[in-house]
Amino acid sequence: TAEQTTYKRVLLKISGEALMGDQGYGLHPPTVERIAQEVKSVSDLGVEICMVIGGGNIFRGLVGSAQGMERTTADYMGMLATVMNALAMQSALEGLGVYTRVISAITMNEVAEPYIRRRAVRHLEKKRVCIFAAGTGNPYFTTDTAATLRANEMACEAIFMGKNGVDGVYDCDPKTNPDAKRYDSVTFDEVLGKNLKVMDASAIALARDNRKPIIVFSLDEPGGFLGILAGKGTYTKVH
Ligand code: UDP
Image 1: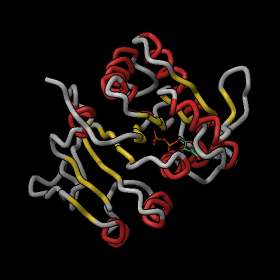
Image 2 (image 1 turned 180 degrees about the vertical axis):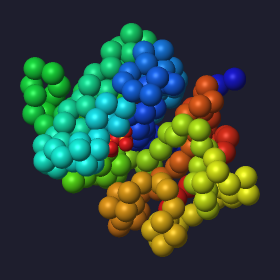
Image 3 (image 1 turned 60 degrees about the vertical axis):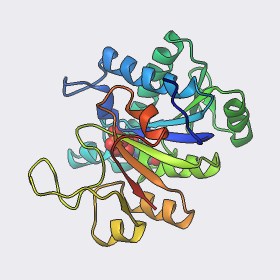
Image 4 (image 1 turned 90 degrees about the horizontal axis):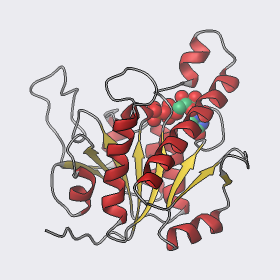
């Protein structure tokens, strides 16, 4: 049965941990390939796809800085981790026959294209999946902020936050509280006011100020991304 969607251009954000499987660290190739398959099924519908992948499966700036490393240096290491994840995703997508570009916010011409907005838009128009790497290119930010920034710049209709082990935004942690209630829909102000776990506050504020809806859904179910784009399954819309 062919899925249908009205979306033309979207951004998929996943954390670095989404790529590590149950290993606890690094990259788990079968898991990377499974997510690549999710992306391919949506790309096959003609939807233009931007991706932002975190780096937490390899290195997080805050952890490095807590261990005594200078904060900005640690953050640059975190950004470099996202480049490795982006290259792994590119390789998996290419293995499935999907055309991709890795576009880095930190110039490293031998490895990835530099970020040039108009060029990235052109890639999307040609149906190439654009994987935006190195976050925003600035320390003290996260890849959630990078996702919101690129979704704004690329005029994506929505940000899709693919989660592991949770299918939306809850009023408290569903893993520890059996009475936790999932929101079908919640406003940016409510997320900020109640400190709900969606994205960090600067990323939420950037989405709110540019009216960019965020759809939080689970990446655990095969076909989940395609289903959510077609309006099926459970999710939370932050708007
Ligand atoms: N980072 C940064 N600026 C950015 C994006 C990321 O400094 O614009 C660094 C930061 O140290 C962060 C690390 O890269 O801890 C990995 O990104 P993130 O924690 O967002 O990854 P995720 O939690 O999504 O796996």
